Length: 294
Image 1 (cartoon, rainbow, N blue to C red):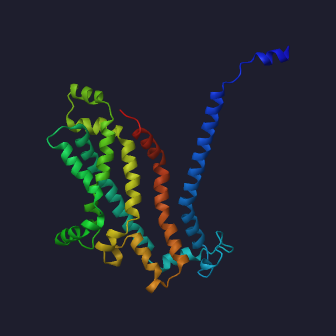
Image 2: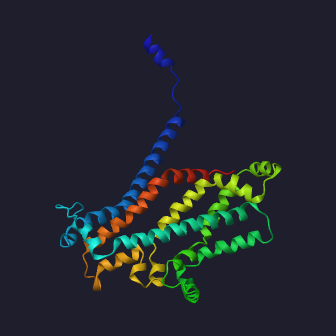
Image 3: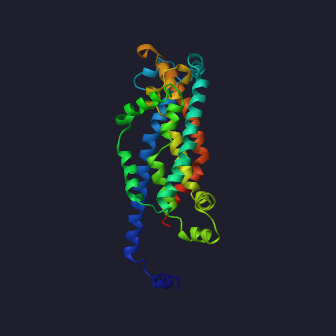
């Protein structure tokens, strides 16, 4: 009787077996690629952390060793001795936070205007703003420097903050978020007598919070690690940002300890990691919502 029941079970279609095999193949292939990319991304950070715990002589041993045999945390103490790290951290924090807040304001206003309002030349102006993303920073740094100098803002934090408030990427990102919000929200608010300012501040801006979170995290990471503009605009040591200040650890003609330099680099990564950990949930939520059309 048991064998008869077994024979009566419907045979699994061959196509379903093939589909399952294909699914597993592409799944594991994707996992392999993601793992390779993760290793490539994390390996330099691990190497920097390992180097920061070695003596300078151990940093150049062949073959190289990933794990230091005798971890030396003195390199981190030397960072605070050789440079005013607290001053550089405060300068970077003030500049970066000011830029992020300014970009959130300008990008949200511009994104709402280009995404929800209708005015003559809207598409042409937006296209011109997007075209600026194709121009490298090095091509515009001279006229920007001349303008900053004539405004007497050279060697000040304002020289880095004010020019960075206008962001083409942020405008594009927020425009996409505002465009995918259903029109029914705006229509209901207008019927109730709401103005454009009220519609923007009370309805659209809260709904675009994931997009603002993405912009904040990406902007913080970009400007915290920025090196080129501070190198051009800042000349006084007390005004240096953290990336610019870490260069002084190399010493004259690169005679500084590479272990101390790597210790400074690891310390500079801590704020970025904290910001990412805090905004990770909003970042993932924003990316997920960004893929859904309204």
